[in-house]
Amino acid sequence: MTLNVEKEIAELKAKVGDMPGAENKLTMIVFSGDLDKQLAAMIIATGAAAMGMQVVLFFTFWGLPALRAPQKKVGGKSFMGKMFGMMLPKGRNKLTLSQMHMAGMGTAMMKGLMKKKNVAGLDEMYDLAAQLAVKIYACQMSMDLMGFTKEEMIDYPGLEVCGVATMLSHAKESSIQFFI
Amino acid sequence: MADYTIAKTLDYKGLACPMPIVKISQVIGSVAIGDVLEVHTTDPGSLADFPAWAKTTGQAILETKQEPGVIKIFVKRQK
Image 1 (tube, rainbow over the protein chains, first blue to last red):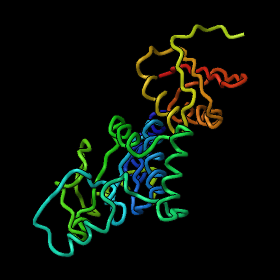
Image 2 (cartoon, chains in turn brown, blue):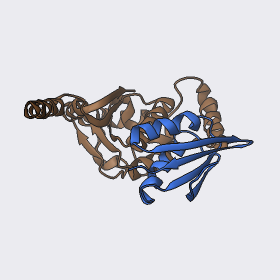
Image 3 (cartoon, each protein chain N blue to C red):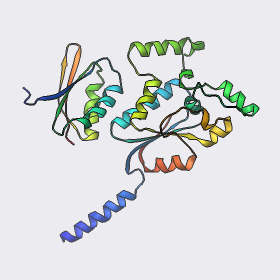
Image 4 (cartoon, each protein chain N blue to C red):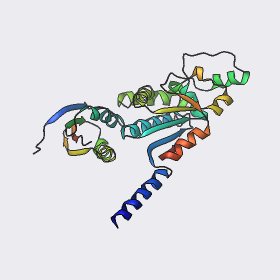
């Protein structure tokens, strides 16, 4: 009788191990290029890492320009690539609020307020995320579309370029998935 | 009154979410199991967040004290 119970528990454990979302992991798609949403993404990411979770961020579409390094220049871009490069924010410090931007006044005011209230900005968040081994992927397809190359991205430890399958395989294993 | 000794006191005053939780998670591994940390914070959100963090990560909150201008949280490393 006891033998049976032990066997059943072992079988159950094996089944649970195969179930989607069984891992203590968070996968987040960072789609938005708004400063406020990117801040929320980084707060959730560092918070989750602090809670002992493995964290994977997948930057795609308008979220992608946040990963651009302001000081890096790459040549040989197509006309459209150059246009995207010019029109999209060059790096996380050029992002603007989704509301109350007011031609820059609102965003500047919010940044000032954050400093005053000692709320960490994106620079500090990225440093923390790197320390906490938060994994960052950049979406290959969006990069191709907008003409971005890996060479113009920030020097974030372990930064990788990938496609939807990599994101999905992480998402399937994760107990939490977010889209921002 | 509490019958434990404090291994380390951590000053997280002035820090906003998620910093207190991120910082404690970076420190907790550096003390011995059974050690108690005394955290000082001014973030009222910590009152809810520390117990939530402790529950998820398997640590224990022994006590929280709200004093004028500072919240004191006593965290015990369990594992």
